[in-house]
Figure (spheres, rainbow, N blue to C red):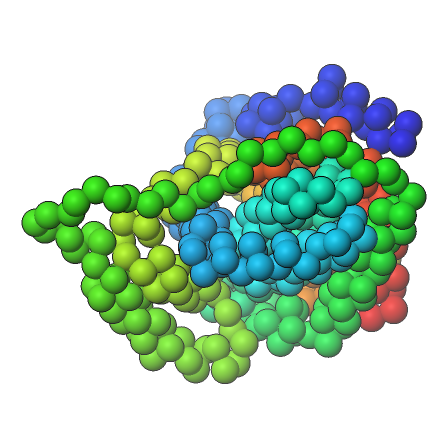
Length: 458
């Protein structure tokens, strides 16, 4: 555990807040562009770079993307805050008899939830870990609570290979890659870019499902081995309640806010519209952010039964979107600089010069993992690194689905090292980063081995 303590110390001393990191990356990108790219004719190079940066920040397509990612997180969280899901979590926690059964239950269900939606998996895992801790405390069950908390975070090491993964879900949109690469690539490269890359070649490809299945088995196995080698910890938790009940007398038009018929009825209308509008695309596994969000919106309204409960859950869930709201525009500005100055092509040319068709996915995986430490956002990372991955893959003849999933795997695996997305879990479980970090680092190493072998074999 000395290594994990050293990593914790490094994070505490040398890594500032995620927003500060985004600002530093912006300044570094501006500097690199100034010194290593050519100035446009008859224009001030520095001012031109600032112009590219500003244009990137307000890119309409990327701002839509940011809003889509915010909704994915919010609506996933809202689903967890509904009474049916709460009841499910409470019933699941009653199956715990010791740390071993706890880590199996929490890790498996969390990974499955995260495969469907990363926001859902993050909050579901946190609340399930908390409920397990409360149940163990109430029934005097010896439990290593920090290990259970780490188990509730493992969904973040599989989410980008799931249905809500930022990169796979965006490339499934018609013309996204072509618009993404329009001002970057040459005509010969553009001719190789498909209109879209559907889920049946990425998320639901046999090799991605195999890797997910392997992790569903090996992660719980590793956790059980750790559970047997560690001692129970003391648990001090208050009962966690996230569904506020209004007992006041409701009068007048406000009754509509509490009407189950009105709430469920509207939710059914949303789901009906969803299946009518997207059935064709759904049957082809062409899942997009709009499709996923529309479905979760309808389902969330139905599960909360009335608008009052739904809006309270939204108010609670939206607190976790501040990072996306304020950081994504900075990442888009970085992309604007890299695209307009030609840095994307230059970097991809470097990868092409040192990589082969076999090694490029590995380089992509490793670089994505490193970038994720500094850019803790799958969407932001796709905006910055996506063009490099696409350009390099097409030049070396690497299948785009494989290259895109290599980026997704690398981005998600170092979430076990990067504490940014663990903040909601730490807040709910009342654990500290240093308590779960020793265990998440072990799981990260296991995941790295699985993904690298998968990229080499498949």
